[in-house]
Length: 591
Image (cartoon, rainbow, N blue to C red; front, side, top):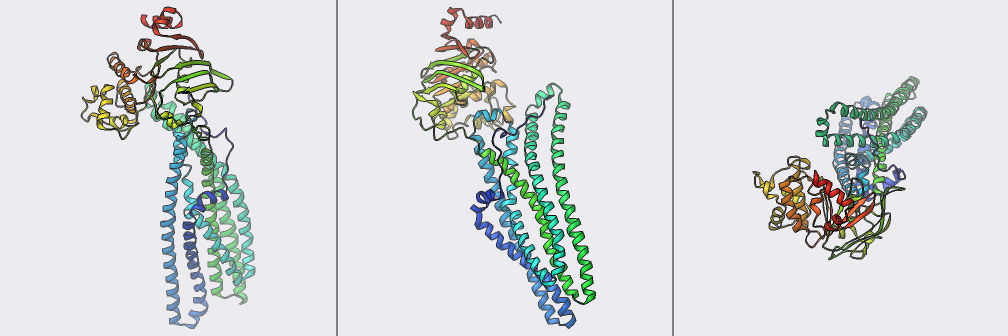
């Protein structure tokens, strides 16, 4: 049974911990104008909210005893206007800040996706695509609580609580002092709870990415799963991941429940009960009026409610900062492109590639290529053959700049390839893989992928050169036929021909063909060999092939064994030498 793998792609990097101050500088300060508007709105909202307890005292102590109807009408108008201001400012707060928060989330998602695409191939080799989807879509969600109503409500709550304290002191200082004791205790509990749950929220992001990554992988491999009857096995693995997520959520809920119960006991319980007793005593003694007591309890509610609200907002901000921690780690990764060192811009290249004593290892101390040296002159075809795991694809990856050599030198037109701007090099590169990836959509869109602005004539030339029209002419929608996710509605040979048409349309100077004809039947292979022959004319081509019959016309054949070049030469020369290539070729010929 396959287990969940750790998809925390930053485990080897220094952990980032985004502080409120950093979040303020990078997210809030650039939008200070909008935040200021929010603070002004929350100021008027909270001031308007204090009108009701203020006028309640006036109602009981002044208006009712005097039976002054004019003053009653005036009081009702003031309270009504205050309520209208509250409702209006609440609407504007949600409308202005929530919309801006969603806009910020979309911006951050775009930035993170752009950053992810700038990372080297090795990053993607070690990271599940579903985990990356979670990083891009979920980790930035909490930002809405920084720029949205959450932070402004937090500031507004603090303002309301402070104003309420002064108003409470004015009514009765001793009662206010009694109230502040349980509030202080609650504050201590809340701070410890926030410190406890931030790592939990951070871990939740990791687990969530793992679960989503596994689910994405399962759905993509559903044919393999069903083919081996492994549905129950996969369900168990997924259930384990979901349970880990549940256990994490349970921990955070425990901390949140502790804060909630603390607020209920300390604020709603002890504070309210004590105020009833003390207030009742003062009223019986005649030192407090009924209006003052009602006003005090209402002001107290205005002070306690924001504190409870702030504890909830604090949890949201803690979760937001945990998500930003992981986002910050991702954004701090070194991109594939290095503008300081890769300064050479290639214009019109000829495609002369030289490997000079190149060694490479995926893991420290485990070389897979050893001092490889050869030249692929411009316009020639270099075939790489050998047993599986010998290093053929690694050489192709180095040629495509997907990998960087650990030692030695690779040059393109006499330029050190490690100094060449990747964009300028890859604009001249075309790659056709054994299991070529097609995007969901139409055949036309997939072929046009490298050159969306290509003319219809150029498109049709590529279609005919790769013999794509041989099967699209039989489809009702032709090139506009929808092919499904990863081209699932097409055969392997059809997908491969679309991939080759895509490479032909790109018109590259350097081509890498990794088992490009392996998925084709005999008839299709014959057609493709003709189109590849046209494609490779005048272009530097690397061909990785297990079918040795397809590389007879290569300008040079490199036989790779255990990371070394065991033999090199043309087909005729290697056959005459009766070495490793001869053994491979004659073995295949007998099959």
